[in-house]
Image 1 (cartoon, helix red, strand yellow):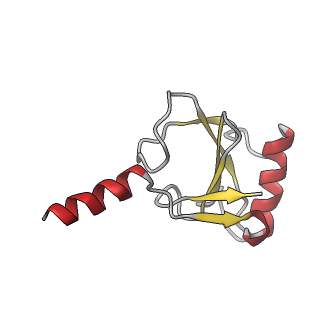
Image 2 (image 1 turned 90 degrees about the horizontal axis):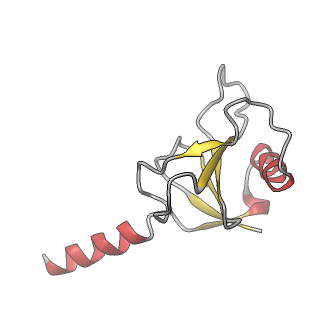
Length: 107
């Protein structure tokens, strides 16, 4: 039981699923990443809104630290599930499954 608790705590403190190289992201995610780093312009009015990290999968920071941006999903009738979440410190995370998991983007 003690080992299970230790494993859970390790997961809870580093809950994103590793890193991903920028070059490994889908082309649409690379375009969104470039827009994020340039400060826009963004194609969706929801882009740049506060991401609350309610799932607690990213490192805990003060409210307003993270912003979310849409990664276009070809063929999707709406914004789709893919996002880039950017922190005020310059770090960015990619999610392909609408915040169920994240990978930190390595430039």
